[in-house]
Length: 292
Ligand SMILES: [Zn+2]
Image (cartoon, rainbow, N blue to C red; front, top):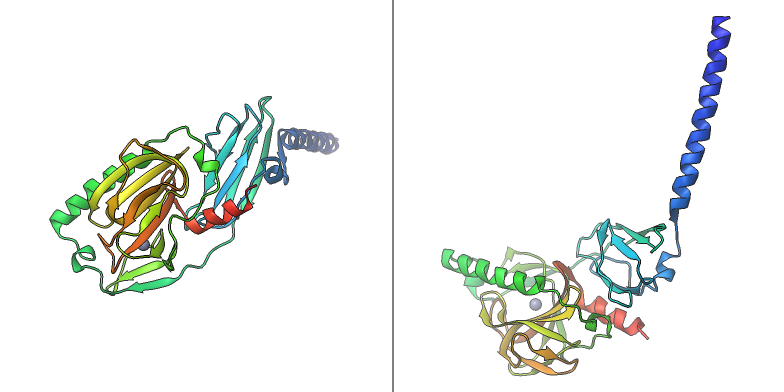
C-alpha cells in the first residue's frame, strides 16, 4: 500500500516537473527567440570572418549587444562591429527592442590563415630596443591609446572608405612578422609601397586625434577618428599636413609617405581600429563595395 502511494506521488511529481519544464522552455522561447533573420533585420553588411568589419542599422530605441557588451548606436541606429585577428569564431548578437523583447543570433565567423612574412634589413634597434628606447616605446603607446580612446559621435565610419594611396600592396593584415630573423608581433596594417613624399589621402572623413612627427616604431604617425570607436592610423610618414583636432574630409591630402621607424623602405602602413580591436583595412574596403 505504501509503495503504491509512493509511486502515484512520484508519477504526479514527474508530471509536474515535465509541465513546469515545458512552461519554462516556452517562456524562454518567447523571451529569447533564436532569430536567424537578425542579420537581415539589422541590415548587416560585411564578411563574417576574423579581422572583418560589419556595418548595420538597428531599430530606433533598441539596444544592441555583442557578447553582452552594448554597442553604441548613432541617432539613426547605425553601428559598426569589428572582429580581431584571432577573434572567437562564435559571437553572440543580442537585440533588445524598445518593448523589451530580446532576439539572439550566434554569428559564426570563418577562421583565417595568416601568412608568415620575413622582413630583413630593418634598423637593428627596432628589433632589440634598449632600455631608454623601451621607455620611449611605452610613452608613445600611451599617446596612441589615449588618441584612440577619444571617441567622437560623428558618423563618417558609416561611409564608404577609399584607398589612401595608389601603389603596390607589400604587406597585409595579420601576417606573422619575423624581423631580421626575430619573430615579433603580427602585422596589423595594409602596406602600400611608394616614394618618400607621395601624398596620403583621407580614406574617410574624420577628426585628427594624433599627429606625431616621429615615433620609435612608426615614425611620423597620424590617427584620424571616424567616429564611434573607428579610427585610421597612418605610419612611417615623412610629413603630416594636418593638425590635431582638425576636421578633415574624405580625399583630403593629409600626409606624405616616409620610411621612419621599423621599416625597410618608404611605404604607407594604414591601420584601422574599432576601439582596441585591430581590423583588416582590406575587409573595410571590401565592405565599402557592398554599401549602396
Ligand atoms: Zn606595415
